[in-house]
Image (cartoon, rainbow, N blue to C red; front, side, top):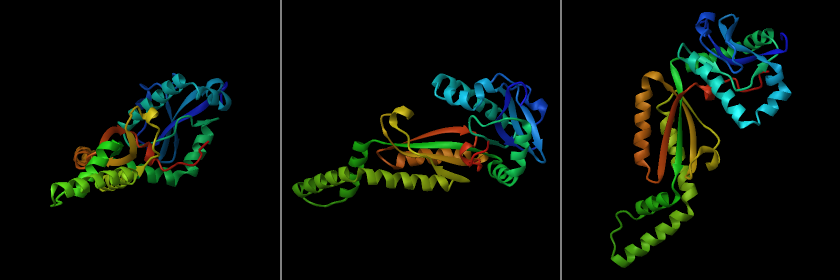
Length: 262
């Protein structure tokens, strides 16, 4: 720590990152990020004032949504720029150390984790797929499927259709979950790795539809087009379910360094 400054950690990379490669980047405190090396690993860090980014002031600032958004954008901008230069392991927002020596200690202590994660994400990026369910449309699709091909008179057919509609309304949550699971399984087959993230409140994701899948997938850069095509096919294959593809993103979900760092 120097003159009330802490060390903000953006990402961990290999030896591809050099001081010159970071000179055009601006960090969360308006600083120029710099490399901190330990063996074959490089941490990209920036000096930040502890009066703003220290433990107690940071807790308060994280409750300010405007401050949080601006800081998150600056953090992600650095990581996204690094990603264009080689594989990186992005660190979560607000990982702050008191000095560079503690960063070097982290690199040494977690060397195997970082090297394994770098191997996993090399040549790959993260994509997000969300599945939204229209309850009425899904129930109608399930009911239609259950009565398809029923050869009966009009009265019998009507009763069968009505029973199927009522049954589909009762089982719509189970049906939606089953479809979300099937979609996730098919997407994982076209990715190096995939994870189901927690489902968020509709108010937070800005949609009125019911979110039934919040998946993240690590996809080979050479196969990104094929992955997008699979998402399109699945979107068409499941009436009542709408898929939304986002990305590419830095591989936050596949960093493999989840436990506390600072």
